[in-house]
Image (cartoon, rainbow, N blue to C red; front, side, top):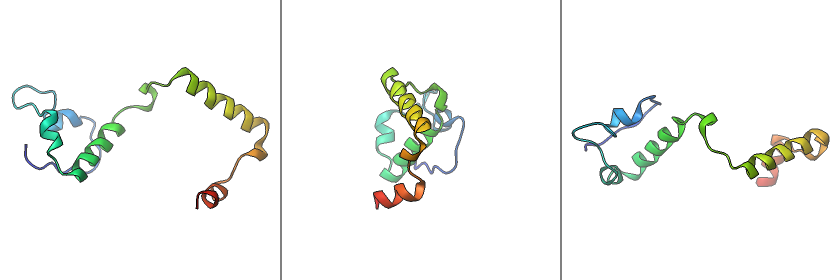
Length: 90
């Protein structure tokens, strides 16, 4: 496989790269040979192509998020502004 330059988003990334297509199918070994920067760009594009609503969420994680949101709504003074958070993180 030749060098793949990934720029912008595509709705059909696997087909654009020849992945999962018939003859000349790109396989993992070929993708691993891409330069690191291009593999990271590919990961980014693949991740961005997954609709957030279809990502699996563990029930315990969802429960925790809902609990924290309820706590924040009940006690808004416990929350941080972006500036406060940024200051804490340095």
